[in-house]
Image (cartoon, rainbow over all chains, first blue to last red; front, side, top):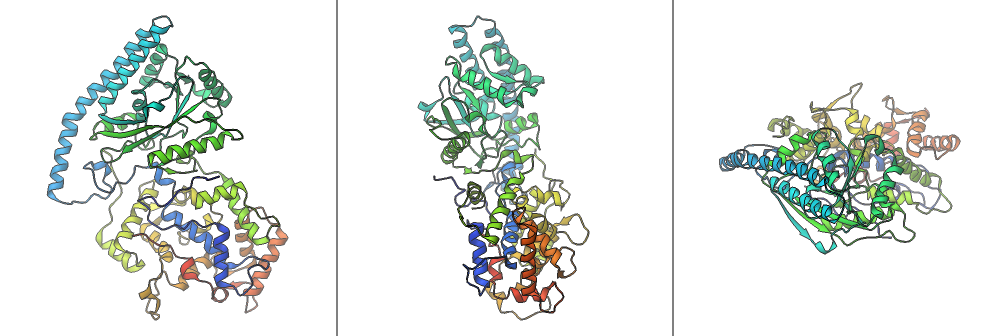
Length: 400
Length: 195
């Protein structure tokens, strides 16, 4: 099975990391230092520690995970102060350009966009409520579709999002599940302005809640109460019920569960892949030169994030609709999820990682450390049938 | 507009760090970027929690020992200078440094200092000796629950027996150097930079 591997180096890598396994490296260290025949009882050597020390310090200098939760570093500056990490005065001309840009963005573009945004959201709430008054039927569905599309398109203008859709013949159809990589809440607007989806999510209070409640009047979305979110069976049941009904719109899900900074795709939660339905993968890639779309929710609230979006130059992105995928015979949900993830990563030019997006906020599980310890123990005391378990392979992918 | 509260690195500081550690200008600025991104509290120092937040380090069996190497006696915070000083141990030895005689101060990335870094990973109480107990504890960290106490004990005994020359049942730094004299320390304890 050709498993995806973080191939090559990302452009911002500081250090060279060789993809060798624990066993290989320790044997090499020992080979250079020992007079003994390597095939004899390979016991402990004091030099074994070099392997762990070097790996540890390598991860301190540069690791694959923590940098996914902050905005991507740009190769050259795009005249937005927020993207400038080592601000130093470069030249008068550049500063003047930046000043001009500031004027245009905040004096002209921002007010225009905010007005459009208010219009779009207001119309969405108002019109969906009206459509909701109609009896269920073809007319209602038709109008609901038109209303949703129109309002989302206004919102797209409000962000000046320039979107290129590829392979629209693969657009998700009724009864399917659409999965995409997640960078920001704007992903929803981008996809929903090109097609109609049933949204899935937790019901919020405040303005968000108002929008959600009126949207569901016009066509069935799947909103969960906060308490229901934890109940995985309930979630799965509601999703499959929806997917079985062919008259209902395709479900839109972001299996990463959190926003990632659009340089990589992180672990997909298997819940959405356990349902019997066609999966339509979608890859979304933003062009960071015009504005960074990543929502760093630990740094910025929703409102300040949206304001930043609306005061960037533009949001430029590409959307690829990938051909639908089915879960194959003998494939479990996790393997299926990884297969879909690999396809999305490949299309979008993103690094495919096995790490969980939940590491943004939570600690890593101890099982990974235990696997390392198990591997090393095998080297010390040997093992009659020494074949690499699945865990070892996973580790290779994590460290290779 | 997003505010970056990190204090910028002054040119004089970069020069001082360059002299002390041997890193190049661009390597220092890149590592400063890295230091700042790890510094969640934005107060110019890193705590142990900041290191533990790196998943790849958290799953390293000796992660805590490595983190400890950054913190001198009884301190809980490390600043950028200290950070660089410890990282300097892993700088590759350049050709023009190889044949230098012992000058006034040995570079941080010399073979001896690399070995000292590894020695200190074993030496838990920093008394410049690796006792049987300390060796056992570090071994236990590396193997987890997969090897019995007896087996681990005999591994420790054998290791000390081989290395110990003055009969004090513990390994001093010189004995440590002797055991590892044939190992290619320069290559195995070095991290290559791309720029």
